[in-house]
Amino acid sequence: MNMKTTTKKPFNLRVGSTITGKWHKNAYFINHVLGAGAIGTVYLAKSHAGPVAIKISENNITVTSEVNVLKILSPAQGKTLGPRLIDVDDIEIDGKIIPFYVMEYIEGVDFFRFAQYYGPGWVVKLTVALLDNLHQLHKQGWIFGDLKPENIIVEARTLLVRFVDVGGTTRQGRAIKEFTEYFDRGFWGIGSRKAEPSYDLFAIAMMMINTIHGKKVIKKEGGIKQLQTIIGQNGETKKISKVLMKALQGQYKDANEMKIELETYVDKNLSLRRSRKAQEKKRKRRSSLLEVAAVLAIAIGTYYFYMFY
Amino acid sequence: MKTPTIKQILLITDGCSNKGENPSSVAFDAYQKGITVNVIGVLDHDTIDEKGMSEIESIASAGGGVHQVVYTQQLSKTVQMVTRQSMNQTIQGVVNKQLQNILGKNMTIENLSPEKRGEIMEVVEDLGETSKMDILVLIDTSASMNQKLNTVKEALFDLSISLNARTGNNRFSVLLFPGKRSDVDVALEWTDGLDSLNRIFRKIEMRGITPTGPALREAIDHFSPTLNLNSPSDYEYENYYEETI
Image (tube, rainbow over the protein chains, first blue to last red):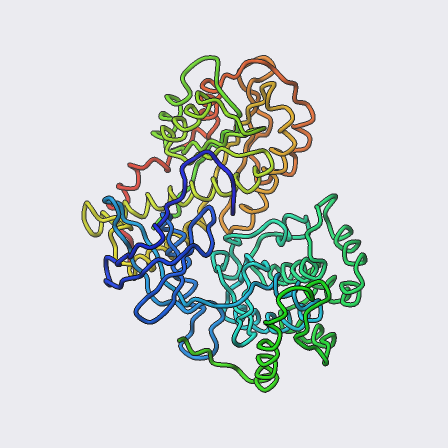
């Protein structure tokens, strides 16, 4: 959550400094800030094994609970849904103990930017993959919670979708820990904040609408009526309105059911050609991304085991 | 470990008190009775006078709570964040007490290795999910707050959606100050939802004075006069009881 306040600033590390953990004695060189919120800051850093992302926050509860979630998201076998957890430690600065954790740095673009670049066809295709990931997570008894385009990264090398920022991930049946208003069914007056698969599926539908339209709409009266109107205002969302409406109203029993229905709308001839909007920009990158598309075609249907550096 | 009842006062105001007892002093008394006092300052523009700011800070600090100053549009997020943060602090305090009973005086969650901390945090989260919560919302309805009240209402309704998704039970009560004839009016008696907020907010008239201290005093009294199981020192007694095996 970002908010302007007059209260104290969150704790910050100096770019260019090196930190060493109190318990495990690993050293990290701080490159630059990747993102900052009210609860903490994420840095790109260098470790002996290559680039990593470091999250640091004075809020012990947040750090520890996110670490617990990352451990669950990184099973020993199978694909990793979130960033792989590498280290958890404290640093001592001016007598103050500040916790941090180190995770795999996932290189790629966020879901929103990717969709703006390659068009609505990819929103459908990537969401199918996303629903697959979600179903895995749900089967393990967890709900992602804070689903939004910024929290989904399309990995540059593999075009796989990965979850980042797992702060909202909540055990099923409990109250959602963190959420973002626009993607929250409570905010729209359509349901509770209980962690259940349908909570995530609502957010997925909102994400699709948001990324296809390329903008957020202002909540007026809220409710399913307003959302239905919004879906009807764009040809691309109108096409898949049956799926969107079911997801928004909690009518899918699980992510897999939604995935199967959405799959029928995937464009078979989808290519990594930039959408008209993005045509003008970045001519050079096209050829390299087409190569990636070829790799993807081979990899479809199998799991890609992501090797870290 | 017994599930604690968490008692919070959430004070929503935009400025300085100008009548009666010093509010920070009352907040201190509240905390001694096991009631945490959180304060949210609501701004219109970029300005808040220093006096108002320092009063907000010192009430929260005396009341063992959290404070945050925000613009009206961010109120919903802030109300939830402050409530949650404060709840976690209370629970962490309880857990720290337990840890000290088991592991010795200077042992707190921060001093544990990250691995141990992870296990303890699951306990903290469990308690956060299952604890009972009593939240008394104390709203400043003096003249300058008037345009903001609609946002306050939405923020509170949103808070009840979040809290009611928990397994533990909640009770809410809403007090407004200044009241019609006294310092405080009880707008909503203890109830488990905030659905009836609409009715309350329709009747509000604006007034000039801001009796924050006396209002806090009445808020303390409004918590049920039954046995106070929330006081920090009471947890120590648990060690005197032995469980049947």
